[in-house]
Length: 333
Image (cartoon, rainbow, N blue to C red; front, side, top):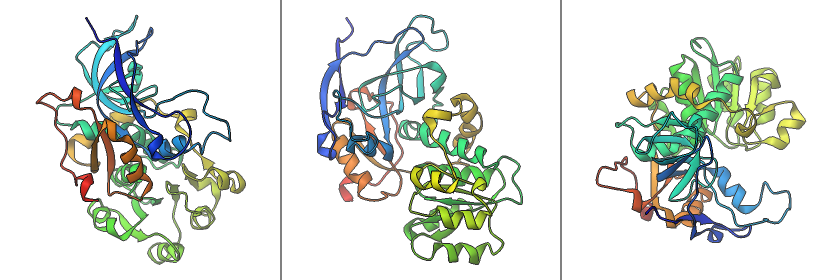
């Protein structure tokens, strides 16, 4: 008889990381057109820290306990009526409808991609949201292959979205400059990116590398860089931000949200999956933690850039064949 309950991360009020706890919940059941995943790993995205804090709630109290997480990788273990694309046992990754920090999650088949055996579970759990965001925003900026002769500046080039965006832009043939902390500059150089130290003086440092300005700017950092970015690109129409909604509206810059205008996963991964398999795009995973340690994962995320993605793993879903990439143990940070 299948289990009647599962476990998931929930929080009952907005606040710090310690509001997150692992609790028993009713087993989620897929509705028509949906599937249920036995989650192997879930990626932690910075926006989830903002949701937990209540930054996006406009002062409204939390109406009921809620979960977090959409970046997941796992095994299909139940399908709803009308689903023909997937069957139990299929290994997939992509976007859960909600509550990805859990032993089981619900998704729709169009948001899932078959996981190649050579793609480690932790990387698979880390790529759907940043991959779609990078693909979408570069498309909005017109940075599509072939992009030879195009100079692109990416703020936050070592973050989750920035890491994918700079590598994708390089693969499409663009010259890519990326602002990041100096600890990440060598990794950016290895990816074909010209690194620029962020912080005071970043604009002058970019101008030294690109005296005639740049053709497009992606702001994935949100550190007040939009005015200088507009000056470099020659106008707000050549700048897109995913991190500075307030200033974007005032300055005429496009603020792009995946919930509003996301690109279908099949379209995104028609380009990204071959690059992931070939090593043309590398997604570093810095921290693995068990699902129960979601609070610690959020503390690490809010404490500064850990050098790669943070992944929650589900011990109960890990038979001997589960493979992850090597990483720096969280205990050493």
